[in-house]
Amino acid sequence: MTEVSSLTGRLLVATPSLADPNFERSVVLLLDHDDEGSLGVVLNRPTPVDVGDVLQAWAELAGDPGVVFQGGPVSLDSALGIAVVPGPEAMEGGGSVEDGPLGWRRVHGAIGLVDLDAPPELLAAELGALRIFAGYAGWGPGQLEDELAEGAWYVVESEPGDVSSPVPEGLWRAVLRRQRNELAMVATYPDDPSLN
Image 1 (cartoon, rainbow, N blue to C red):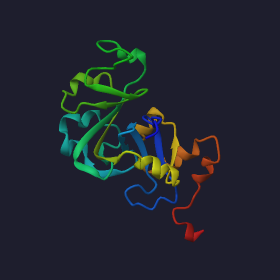
Image 2 (cartoon, helix red, strand yellow):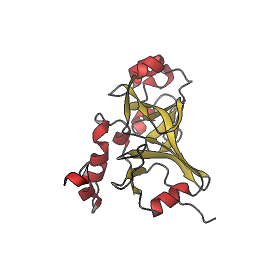
Image 3 (tube, rainbow, N blue to C red):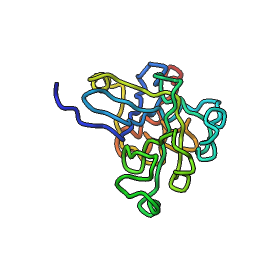
Image 4 (cartoon, rainbow, N blue to C red):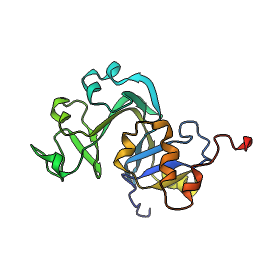
């Protein structure tokens, strides 16, 4: 098998032609991508469930909207915490820029995974934004590469604000709109092209 170039930390943005209802107009943050497969969370699928209803201890730290997000179709009964830890000045008191605060593991840049079994107080002073996801999106070896070759996804750079977008329903258009190429035009693609 050929070496897979890691897309960890990048965004997968569903193309308008992606018809799978799990991923239609979705924006997926890749948390892990290598030759053994890929794992990510859908950033723009808020549920009506408040974080306090399932993880009361973390509710105060959850960003707006303070709801659980459906991270993908796999393991919907498990929770993942993704948080942004601001720049080096926020690392005083225990962490370093390289490893971040205790209970947080860097994925890419300022974005990392939160140990939801850790006491929230341990991270409260360090976190800039926290999102809780039920489930995740997963691909087996080579599966994501096949979908990319078929044109199902655009791959773009992530920004820390993507994780905590206060209007997640608009994230698909917002991410496309900020691209500096023809992808910016895709943001104007109608929800139902047959009405065009």
